[in-house]
Length: 103
Image 1 (cartoon, rainbow, N blue to C red):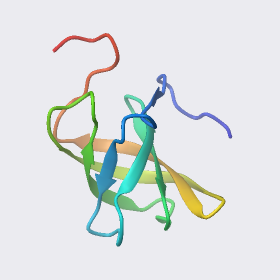
Image 2: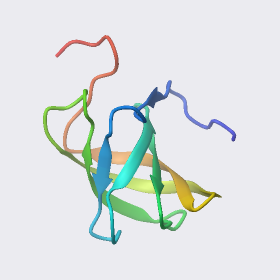
Image 3: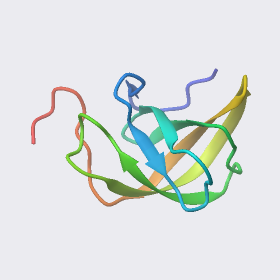
């Protein structure tokens, strides 16, 4: 897969970080990784490329509570029975810190 991000990705697979959207039915969305400009989602359904969505995200280990983000979906790919979607973060209700950064 072509990496389009300008900033280093931080894997969230082992943290159990999740996202929720009122446009997405069913179970929470898994957050695969995040960078300063975007994030990768994994779910059972797909979002439309180019569409703008809003999510509540829980970044375990990075934030003490939920953040509300607005994203635009840049790509999607079916992997087995799940969808992987890449999203560019347009706005966020709070900033999150990268590894090794202090409050």
